Image 1: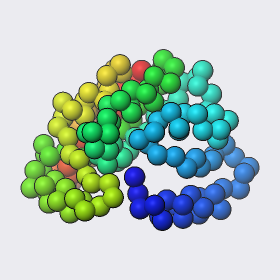
Image 2: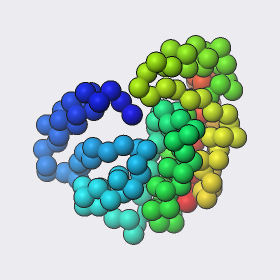
Image 3: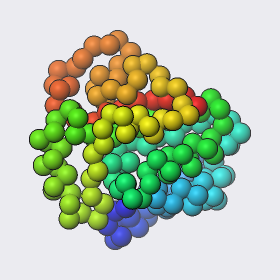
Image 4: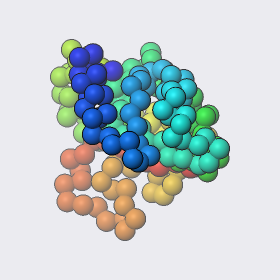
Length: 165
């Protein structure tokens, strides 16, 4: 999903930072190949798939084109998780600031991974099989337990939500 030369550099750097003393590892894989991630030995060693876990898909699904089946990717990952697990995701949208979304999408057209903005209903569909946690799928800065809207929140054109399987 990234420049092929960048991913190995990031992977090598991440491994250099890890001391091997904790419960952290890096698995070089492509989100478009979810079984590769789920079957990776490092993932299997660290994650007990019999206990609830959190799946974080933060600012990544908008780099998966429709023809790459983002809903199928999410479904595959969620299907591997036991009941009680959580899915947290954020995703760019054209619903909130269409002019900005259009400009950024155009800027990404020549990138290795173009940006695909999706609507509220399309993003909500990623949570199929989960119960959305209040306040649901909302602008990222408004997903707050106190319900307050921070200054400048209207500038954000990304939805975020958390769902419980």
